[in-house]
Amino acid sequence: MTLHILSEKEKKEILDELEEQFGILEIPGIVVKRGEERLFLFQGSFTENQIKELDSTVPIERVGIYFAKISEGHIRLSIDGIQILKNQITKNVVEINLEDVEKWMQGSELQITTGKKGYIIIKYKNDFLGTGKASENKITNFIPKNRRLKYKDQ
Amino acid sequence: MNQRRIPEAKPLFIERMKKLLDDAEFEKYEKILKEQPVRSIRCNTLKISPAELKKKLEGKGWKISQPWPKYPEVIIIESELEPGELGRALEHMLGYYYIQELASMLPVMLLEPKENETVLDLCASPGSKTTQIASSMKNKGTIIANEIALSRIKILASNLERCGVTNVIITKKEGSALCERLKKQNFEFSKILVDAPCSGEGTLRSSMKTYLMWNIKTIKKLPKIQKNLVEFALRILSPGGTLIYSTCTHAPEENEGVISDILDQFKDIKLEKIDLPVKHREGITSWENQVYNSQVKKCARIYPQDNNTEGFFLAKIKKIK
Image (cartoon, rainbow over all chains, first blue to last red; front, side, top):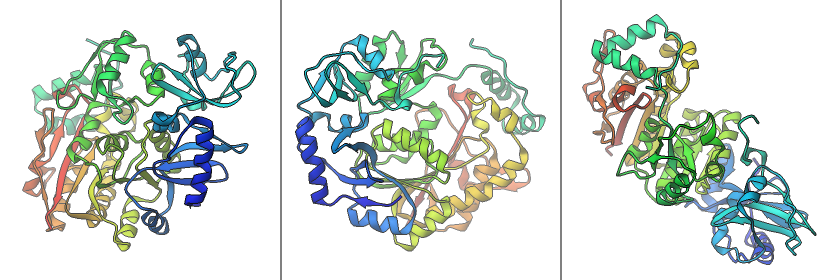
C-alpha cells in the first residue's frame, strides 16, 4: 500500500468536518489515508517515523483500522470508527427502536423522518450501529455486507 | 452425550496416537472426538466488559458460564444454538466477542502481553490471537501482525476491524524473511508469538476435513518451516523477552522436535515452566529413535480429553541475555 500519513493540516481538515457533523473534537492517533478516500486510525505506540522506517523495511498492508471514508466532501464514519469515537459524539445521532435495529443491521433503509439531512449516526440504547444518510423521510444504509445480520438460510 | 458421526481416522494416525497415549487414555481420546466441541467465545474487552456482555447474552435467553475465574472474558455458551447462530448474532457483528476455541486462547495467556510492549504475531491470520493480544494490551503499545497470503490478510483485517484493534500494523511477508529484514533495521520485540502452520491434528473435533487431509508427508515437511520461523524470530526478540511457540497438533516432530533443535542451536535461551488454567502434560523426550533435549519436558501438551477442548502444544522460550 502507498503509505500516506496525514499531516497535522490534513488531519485538521478531517477533524473540522467531524466536529461540524458530530461534534467530535479530537482524533486520538495517527491517521493514514489509503487510496483517495479510505482513512485508517492507528493508536499504537509507534511514531510516524517508526512507521515510515517499518514501511521502508517490509511491505505494510494496513496501519491501524479503517475508521472513516471521505465521501462527497464529508466524512462517513465506519461502525468501528463510531465505536472508537463514541464518547465524543454529541450531535446528529438518531436513536431507533428494537424493530428497526433488525432491519437496519440487515442492510435495509429505514423509513423514518428525522428532520435531519446528511450523515447521521444510528444508535440503539448503548450500541452504536453505524452511519446512515438522512433525507426527507428515510435513512440510507451503509452497513457493509460482511457486517449485516443474516438469516440462517442466507 | 452430543455424539455424532465422524470420519474414520487413517491407520497410521491411530498408530501414532496410540504411541502417545496409553490404552485407557486413547479410549477417552477416541470418545471425545465424537462429541460436539464446546461453544466458546472470548469477550472483546476493547469494546465491552465481560459483565455487560454476559447481561446481553443472557438477555437473549442464552445460558452461559465462565469456566476460568482468572479469565472472566472466556465464556462458554451452554445453551443449544442453531448452526451458525453464534456468528450471526448482533453482538458478534458489533465486535463484542470473538468465537474462539478454548485451547486456542492459551498461547496469548501464556505470552502475557502488556500495555506499551512491542509485540510480533508472526503468523497472524485469521486474527483470534492478534485480537486477544490487543485486548490484553488495551490497544496500547504496538502489534506487528504478519501474514503471508493476501486472501488471509483480508480475513485478518476484517476481524481486527470488527474488534476495534487500533494498535496494529499488518505486514505481508514470509515469516523468516520478515524477521531477517526487521533484524537489519534493528527492530526488536519484547514478546513474539509463533503460532506456526501445522498439520492440525488437534482440530479434529471442529474441522472434520483434517481427518481426510492428514498426511505423514506433511508432518515430515513442516518442521523445517516451523524451525525456520522460530530461529529467525529469536534473533529479533529483546534480551529478557518471551517467545511462545504453539501448534494445534500432537505430532512430536512439529512440537518437541522443533523446540529441541532450537534449544541445541541457541545458547542464550531457556524454556520456562508453563502455568495455565487447564490440565496439561509434559513434553515428551523421545520419539521414533529421536532423543530430544531434556528441557522439552517443560513444554505443554494439551489433549482434547483432558479439558474438553481441542488439542494444542505450547512452549515458552525466554531469551536470557
